[in-house]
Image (tube, rainbow, N blue to C red; front, side, top):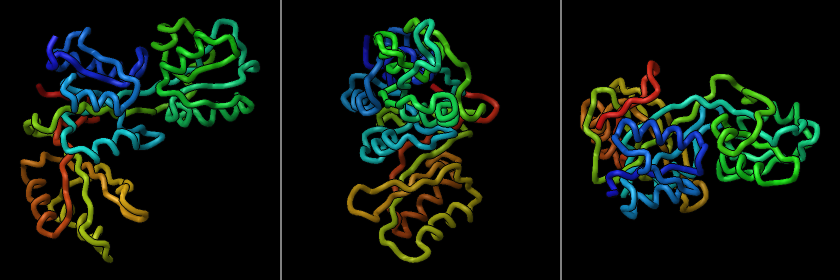
Length: 292
């Protein structure tokens, strides 16, 4: 099997990341045995940089908990990788445990940090005395519960429950019914994605110098051209306290007007720009939109 037939994702088996990876694999023609599970987001992305896999599928943001900082910080720090696609999957969390476990007996709940946060209200009201422990993924939480003799529970999916032989103690425990996670398909920057006519561009922007109105001026370049920004977030520049960069998702492709002109003007103004990827955008009418 060649690198072109391999796609990595945040494992282990049973995660929502695996489901997203399966959908991308189907669209890209990657065979089932070409999916590679990784223990962390950096590990999945490192494998692409090393040339062992062609793509990686990683979580980027959740509608309740916001951005996955680990993913964005990695993409900000390397110019070798670029976003090649996106998918938005609905998130349904269940409370999982061994057969016969009662809620009143649960001493601890395990899951990924974001999953615990997405079920905060349920856990506080129904399991206020149970300690919460973070795991690398929801599926890893289910695995730990399945091999532990203590009265533990996990926040995870129905898929994870089947995979690890656990019962669903309580269904649909997320705080908000309309919960969704955005996943990114990441490849090498040397393989840019051609415009499709319905694209999104993610970029990181740093102001050359901190001065009054600098951010306002930068955003005005997009507004003057009627370019919608679907996301604007500041992240630490990791240099010194008080220094930040801005993550921007803009509608359009970086090589096509009007976005191409906006980026050129920003560079003329002295803004420090790096495009993290221009790729097909997910539309409200469908959950996955990919172009080979």
